[in-house]
Image (cartoon, rainbow, N blue to C red; front, side, top):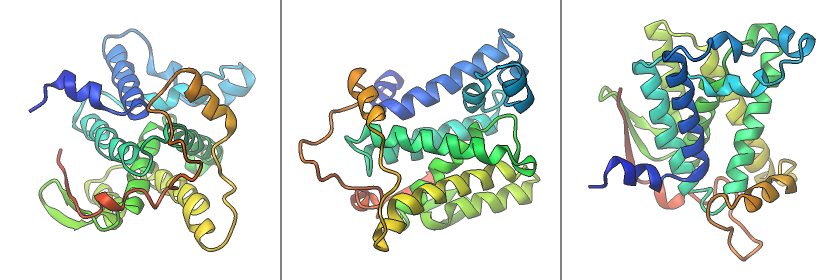
Length: 242
């Protein structure tokens, strides 16, 4: 059995970086090093006081150290990692672009008053869950040891649990919307004969190559797109526990 250090070093780069920054952000807040309101998404402060960092920092605060924080971190470590090691293996730039596109989509949605949230990190994490559920639809999932179902239904089951436990459902809904938009544009629309209009920009590839993030892509220019690379994992069983 690998040690925690070995497990951490084995994680793929984007999921590891995002999860690490989220832990550091919450740790710094718990230590009183900053006020969480200084990194929240407040449009008035962004545009009238040019506090543009809020457009980015709000994605890295997942709340106080709690059971819910642990579950969200587990989602990154499980679903984000399985995506990055499965369908997005050796396609670090594509995975990073998916995260960027998801963040941009959530920022646009948050401009609508009914969808506004000061922190969009929970929605970004839930987007990973949604994309994972579409990539591995036939995987068996066990939620808290209570509910067993196919992965395709996982986002909706978790949404239903939020309703039952009285938790806010808007963050989950935003994640589902962002995840479905990404999956539709990159998988469903091209499969229906349409053009993939969401190809990873060249500048993202350059950033990944410049900083040597992740494993280099295959030599072949024909790469498996999302929805095609995870078939080898779709028969596995997964357990989500709190």
